[in-house]
Length: 80
Image (cartoon, rainbow, N blue to C red; front, side, top):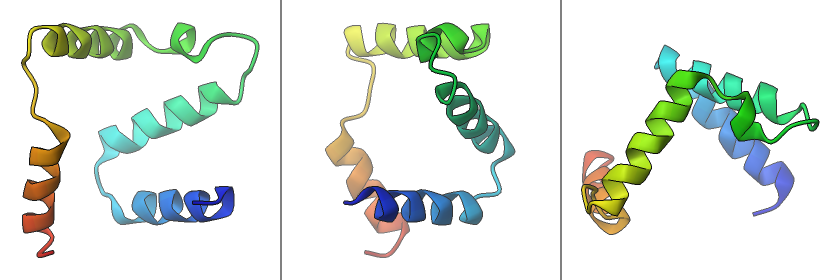
């Protein structure tokens, strides 16, 4: 997918969501990514860092759902 296509796809997904917390996370990530002085992780909020750490611990302890299973569920929800 080209950069232009990717930007367009992301914009459409953003336009279609009403999840304010998701939009705030996307905004935070994109706004901080534009500042290239530091690593993006260093600019995350403590809450975001804790969420990432929890995800790493969950994955290390096999507490996750495989992408293939999630994809099947999403496809069913979307009627594909």
